[in-house]
Length: 89
Image 1 (cartoon, rainbow, N blue to C red):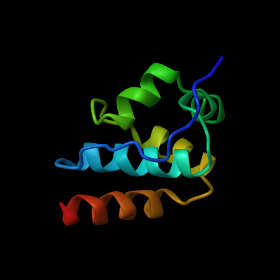
Image 2: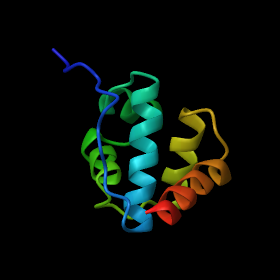
Image 3: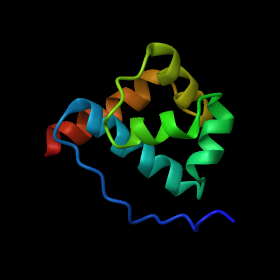
Image 4: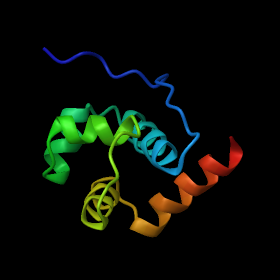
């Protein structure tokens, strides 16, 4: 059984990768999606999605595009949100 989705997950945003991961986590949990759901929608593994959300992965352009599309955004919108989050730190 999957764990409940918490909208209170906190992610670091010291680096741009961490900020992108924090934005993906925020958008995913706002839709009450699990990491498994996002992984299915993007075609990437749950482990890869988790690594991205924690700022451990450096996503390819293809992954950014897949995540943005799954979330109903353009890649530029996803990256702009990450840039704003990183700038606020």
